[in-house]
Amino acid sequence: MPIYTDIAAELWQKTKGTVPPGVEFETCYVADVTITRVQILRDGLARKKGAYSTVDMPNFAYIDDHNRHYIDAIAHELKNFLPDEGDILVVGLGNASITADALGPEVCDKVLVTRHIPVEEDERAFLKLRGVSTFCPGIEGKTGLPAAATVRALVKDTQPAAVLCIDSLFTGDPARLGCTVQLTDTGLCPGGDEAKRLDKETLGVPVICMGVPTVMDAAEVCSCNHSLVVTPKEIDYIIRRAANVLGLSINRALQQNLSVAELTFLTS
Image (cartoon, rainbow, N blue to C red; front, side):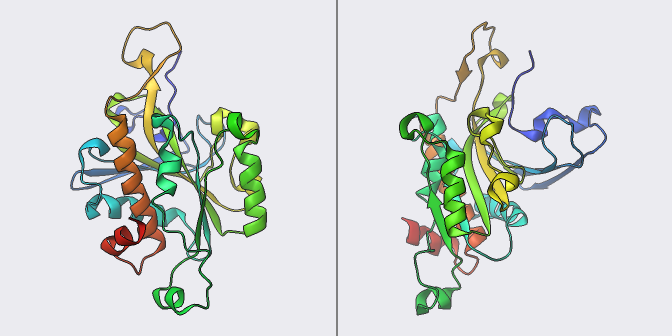
């Protein structure tokens, strides 16, 4: 049985000559950050047609989570996916009670929320703040409501220019646990249920997804006949620092008139 992964760059290894027709790779390096852009140009492949960008960097557990080098690298990739104008709704998916699945809610806590500030007020107009709101739908087992339904209702009411979903991801490569950020414009399926997919077709606006791999199939690292997943022992540090980096990266991409120091002050 093949190992499951959410990371598009893991499905085809360009260096081994296994890239099928309709898939394009581009890789660039900036100091200790590697950026891999995968463009899937046709349907019928292992991932949905669209753009995927993977930022590989040192493990979040051991980096300075206010390092501008990492923040700017992720923010630059995110800006390529976002519309130039309009409000953005940031959705934090996952279970806040389970550390490995808490990335979405944790990131939302670090996002600078501005939608509630009236546009005509001097402060927002002077700083040219972009309208940003956040929402964490929780898990269906606690709310009784699927994330797709609550997000769809919220989008209908608030009419954002795009939705940015944050979620924990699966990887098939232990070297990517807590070390990678993937962005894509293809949407996602909470819990793997296609009927609950969040994408442009179901929400009516562009849906960008950002995540960090925090779990993987145990069979990839040990002989195991059970359906088990594993997560790094430093998962607490990974989630905490990844949330800071991703939160600042989102803020940096959306509020380009503010410095990292100013964004840190406003969200601390």
